[in-house]
Every structure is written in structure tokens, then in C-alpha cells.
Image (cartoon, rainbow, N blue to C red; front, side, top):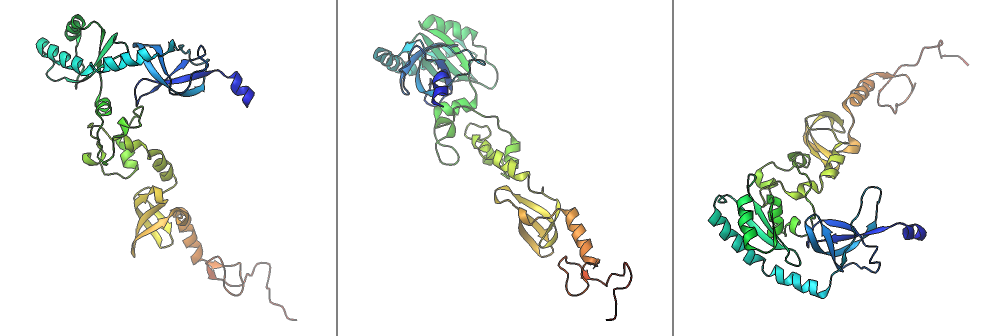
Length: 313
């Protein structure tokens, strides 16, 4: 195993935000790189500073990885702090220009972000519809020496940036550990038996809660082995109708003549099998001549096949 790991090329996972996606880069020019080091890399959005979070095997057949340009210097770190301190001022200036240009009344300007050396300024904004930022970009480009980027983001991204507490009373998942947003649907709430009341399934961002996806696979897998609601099944209490399903308990609630009963999966008998057993139990048994039969059927008469079994000794 040691020989394989030595021959397998590895890549460095780099993160540009505290809670953000990992992007992978070839770090072969810097073999002494360690987790926690800051590096300068070239990205689709220009030159960025990121932090190395770890290392992973590279798949050269599927991806071509860009190389890390260099390890960040103390000067780079100081520059980043200085430009980050100017972000609020840049956002205020952007709002001032937007008000002067006009047409952005329905737009929410969320944040302004400089890259580490101030060469690029990104304005994050949000709106229900796609926003034409051409005029605003032109005025911003004349005002700021940095390269200007206007990026429209969604409600989930806004919640991630702003942070705060969710409906559960804990810090929002998106701003504490979620590095990406998974697709979420009403189907996930239904599978878990969660009320479809908007207040129960909607997060602070106004979209379906991210946590709906956490246990969905476990519920979906458990439901595969349980009868659906309103289906009739055989139970220790007789034939019954399923009125509720409890995936994590591996059980269902049924309604019988005696009322509601909880039945675990191991005690459930498919209705066809149940009916067959009931029919068999009402027929006389030919297996046992005397005494009780262990099949549950009524004791039957002696078999007359092959002639009489009576003999005088």
C-alpha cells in the first residue's frame, strides 16, 4: 500500500471561503505544502488566495489540474486584511451609484468582496428576475481601479453569507458546515412524514429547508420494506388496514376491530399469504391421525387411501 500511495499523484484541496467548496490544484512544485498553508492560485475568476485543507489522490484521466502558483507570503496576508476592511465602504459606494443610475429598486445588494490584492471587486446582488447590470458596471468601472464583477446570487447564498439562526434554534447549517446546496423537493418531506405546512418545511431563506435531505435516504430505504398506507395486511391481530407508516421504527400502525395496533415488520404477513393460511386452517388435516396437529388446521379423519389401515392382531 505504501508503494501505491507513493506512485499515485496527489492534489491539494483549496478553500477560498471559510465555509465553501473545495477546489483541487496540482501542488507538485511545492512538495512540502501542509494543511493550513495559504497559497496563491489562478482561477476562472482571476488570481485568488486560498487555504489548503487537505490532500487527495489525483485522477489525471478525468481532470487537468492547474498548478499552485506560489505559497502566500506574510505581505499577501496583510494585503488581504486591508482590502477586506474596505469592502463595506465599496458596498456603500455601489449603492450610491445604483441609486444615481436608477432601475435597481427591486435589487438587494448583499456584499462587496475584494480578492486578496484588491485587483478584483465582486458585487453580490439578488433579485427575483435576472438583472441587467450593464450601466451599473460601467459606472463602477469608472469609479474603482479594480476589475469589476457583478454576480447575481439566490436566497440560499444570501442566508449562507448573513448567517444567523435557523428555525430549529441552532446556527444555520449553510453558514456552519454545508459547503454545497443539494437539490431538495417536497417528495423528501412526504417520505419522512413531515407536515407540508410552509412553516414546517421552509427555511429562513424562504426555500425548502436543507435538513430535509439529511435523513431522506434512510426513510426511503426503510419504506421499501414496509406496506404502504391504506394497504390491507395480515397481522397477529387478524386482517388489518395500514393507517400509518413508521420507517425508523420498522413498523406500521393498523386499524382492527379492536382498534389501533402497532405492528412490526417481522410480524407482518402479506394478505395473499394470510388468506391462504386462513383457508388452510379451516380444512381438515390429513397429516395427523390422532391428537392435535401443529399446522393449525382442524384434526381430520384417518386416511383411507391405499385401503383400510384397520387390522386385527
